[in-house]
Image (cartoon, rainbow, N blue to C red):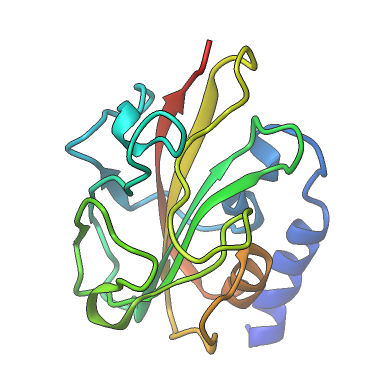
Amino acid sequence: MTSLDRVLPGLSRLALLPPCCGEGALAEAAYDAPRALRLTSPAFRNGAPLPPLYSSTEGQNVSPPLAWGGIPPRARELALLCEDPDARATTPFVHWTLYRLSPTVHRLPEGLGPDDGPLGAVQGKNSRHRDGYDGPAPPRGSGVHHYHFQLFALDAPLDLGPHADRDTLTAAMLGHVLALGELVGTYERP
């Protein structure tokens, strides 16, 4: 199989992502890779509410601590996205873009600043066009929003400079995703 054969199916899936809300709008939908990575957080369980500390309106807007395992031996880089597919204005709303993360790193501490990156990792643009984490802030009365932290193990380092956004990152990852994992936190402002 040539690299073009691996990229073309991914490009087709990316082009077919629906422009509306829902699971299909998440970055992970573009990749045909096993869900072999275990992504966890000591701050919240999968499917449980994110503590207000991580909100940009009701907390301190600090990134949550994350930990993972199951990285394939062939992995050369990790990338992380946090997206909210329930947002109405921008779907999905990107809360965090992080790439160039060494596969030897197995956790992120709480409260990474926009210029912080363990072992050379880079934080790219969120939907507010700023580098780094931007916590939950759903409109009041819009119901429960789901924040999908998606971790990708890649078979090659990405050739991306600083400030990459979601679209640039997801396009660069096509044909390179070995495995992925997901952790979902919820948040609601009644």
